[in-house]
Image: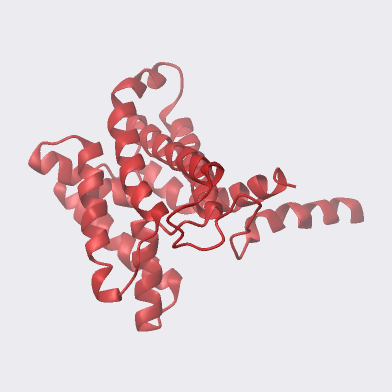
Length: 227
């Protein structure tokens, strides 16, 4: 019984990560504009996986991430692709950094381009997945991929994504809890995206519940294999 309790505690610790670990390929500072080729390559791989997860959530038709609800609704209103819409939304969010006096890193810029390009380039070719997998499974799988990709790009330590930067910037400027700021922002973008016609469903709820554990698991896996 003690053995089982010990293993359970060890397992639960995976989901209680409170900081982003640094590994031998992590950048020494977030504003590094000339990272090693290895760091830059792994960053791009992480962002591609992130974008692929977002794409799978879209094709699942069970609901998408809060920010993609907004991008999808925006895309429908002005009749453009969701990849381009995601790019535009990310750029708008980046402009919101200005009053917060935040500085984007290389990872911030690559986040904008790679995720938007991945979604725009892969979504049209992924609908075949619905012929083999249940939409609910795709929602969980897409959420896991977003979390896994997040862990990789966070460990690269080349600057946060536009949305994460906005969240932490507001929290710091107004001295409010990150959890409250994140909830407030995502509630607003989900509501606005739903009004515009974005897909809000059980997949959105699945993402909200499981994205945190997925990111924590990714941070543990990536740091473990770096030993």
